[in-house]
Amino acid sequence: ISLSEKSSPTRKNLELAYQNITEYENELSRYFLNKIWELKHIKVCGVTNTDDVHKRTPTFALIVKNKTSHQVAKYLAKHGILAWSGHFYALDVVREYDLEKDGLLRIGMLHYNTKREIKELISVLKLLA
Image (tube, rainbow, N blue to C red; front, side, top):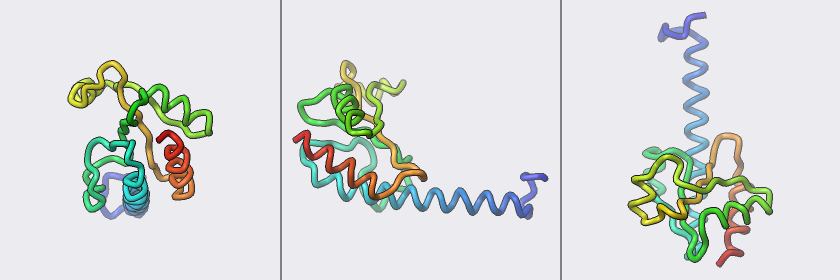
């Protein structure tokens, strides 16, 4: 099976699958951004306009007021929510936010996630206010 041929049925199916994944991840990103704005103690870095989610990946860098990224990642883990903390080899970005010491909290909304999980994340993050 050759995927290099534009008319290949396998290639067309893969392209459709990736298109569907992208559309779903964009939907999750819009949902997340609309919900996270309720939390005034959290700042989202990068593209935040819901009309522009196609310009970013569905991975978000967050800053939680009066908490380090490591503290928040540990807190989320206790609630069964996986997140990462640090600089993720993006030192220029971390420096831009003056967070070289503490880094950022990173969380993803990918094709295997659900709106219910995002709603749960928001509920848990509300408790940090």
